[in-house]
Figure (tube, chains in turn red, yellow):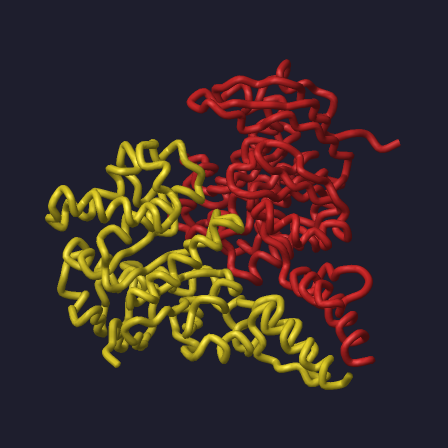
Length: 287
Length: 276
């Protein structure tokens, strides 16, 4: 039987300074070892939702919370952030907010969290190497974290999370500052680590190409609520819905949608350009 | 055509001796929208910071709107070059949205009435007029980026430089950004956009400069630059998805340099008509 890594029941949250609810009745289950993609317009509650998974909401960020979040069976309301953080890793959107500030080198930055976990020195070296390799920062060990470019800092905060091998990895737009091939290679490394360590992974992204490539299910959040949870195949057909909600979609899905409207498309919508090329080759060029 | 930007043999070396820019030369005609693309650390932001005098060349020349940027301070250059930083926290300081945007026009010595007009116009361009009395830190990341853009627009500079304006923007934010860029075009402004978003480049930029390791690898019409995947790959860039599709389909007679979904739709529908 597959257990739930995360169970969210009717979760609502209102920030102290706001009158509106950032999250407004979210119910959602994430299975162990699942790769869930989350997308949605600005202000949909994506980042707020991430913060509620390791207890930062409600324990650190002030506001009013209703409903429940169970992470690996632990109720976040009754558990401490430090306890939850030992198995939930979060990579925030702004990498600078994540740097410890005390580490003088990239290596120390990654080591920091491992020391807190009590990892032995030998194992630590392996883990640091694996994590830096995954994000393409081998050779950066002695560089200063605050001197890195935005994209490099984003890679570093991913590496610190990867090194800790959390059972649940929460990534809030982790590749936004990376160059296009860099984003692809970092995400493929995240995906292989997700498989190697059977890491439950939640990826918040406004890059539909990446979501369709890696996520098993894609959730659209809108106005603090779950608008839909779909398989990639179902999501690929939601071009009209995405546009209405203000969610970006892939160019190949948009193409299929436009051709479909004109009666020139039949069958599934493509998940990537390879599938698009196959269908178009068959339907337009008879080969 | 007059030149809004003329960069000649620009070299920039850090104090540790590392060369961030190696002999970069590039001209931008007035009124053009140009993309700066390339991998992380290629030197895009370093080049852009020379345009408003934030960085001074180790050697070479940078002329913007007829002014030698290497000889003027960043605050003098701010009158002609508006710079929208990658990270809004590097730019924002005001206690309210109004105060934030009004700061520039105030500094330029505009009258109270003008300040108000410029501020409101800039905020309405980026869709934030309704937030005029809010605190910038209560806004989302995407909104704060738009606020930075507004504070630059309010100064009505001849040249606008945007460093990754699309980061943190959702679909509506992207549409809004595109409409601001279109508006700047109609106003005859020269715009330089640093971005990793090739869909934005394909739609909005007439020319694209591909940078890699401090050098200018290519500078040409966007269509030429984006339809050459092996050259783009030298600096970790991929063509837009629809262009990659076009290149794959080129063996069947599809044009390799299709850049937008609309172009591809039109091409395929037309080819269907021809065979029918």
